Length: 300
Image (cartoon, rainbow, N blue to C red; front, side, top):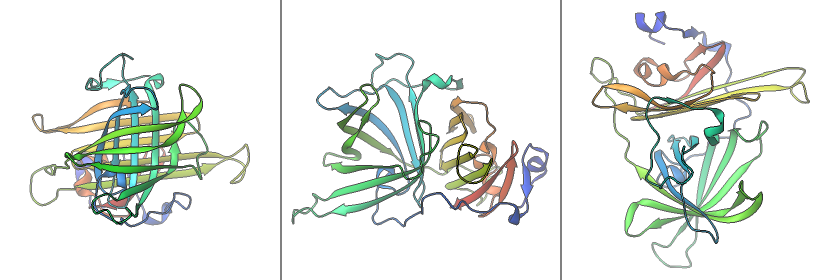
């Protein structure tokens, strides 16, 4: 990595390439089969506008955002709103550190999608999506867990997608049919410090270590993390045993600075690398952050 004096003076240590191997357990990244939003697994930032557990009415008790890279790595953060009666348009305050009780769900992994034939009706294709969990705030061991859903475009609004499926309703503990409405937001280019052609649109950093007695059994301890930066957005999720940390940031055009919107947990994350120093990275770079080794696994 080409490092500035600022980078060398920070809390991040540049690691030699051989010190960290790519994850062997993260679900394989599949190439995109069609263009689309984060919901179909291609690059994008999607914000959930509502969820409906049939036959109840739709509501939105969380601030839910999914960032998905071109290679289909994703970080999905769902933060409970402070007021359970808050409207769907309510937003979380900036610069806020929240307790773990405010985390509804955090997921990181890879996604894939396929098109279901429409019986000859043009424009009526159904996109079937799958999201393989690599880290899950609700399960310490989520290997093999895959969510599935069908997506339908809104004919009157190209930025809206309806997702339907069936999953466990956490409020009842019963598998229930659901409907989610997602809105895709445009990805913008954030200027690199000092201007020039160093802008980075996409960056993903991944971390994994296994400690304990062997690779299986009660002594096994898995530490994993994934950071996804897309244009003006960045989300991170790390889990070390029962220690969960998430963070969401957005580039503030007026301040010309990255602003933390939500943070939960106390683990150190390579946020500075993914945001302010993204232009200095190259693919396969490795850095040590808080004792963990993070690797740049995607860059564009």
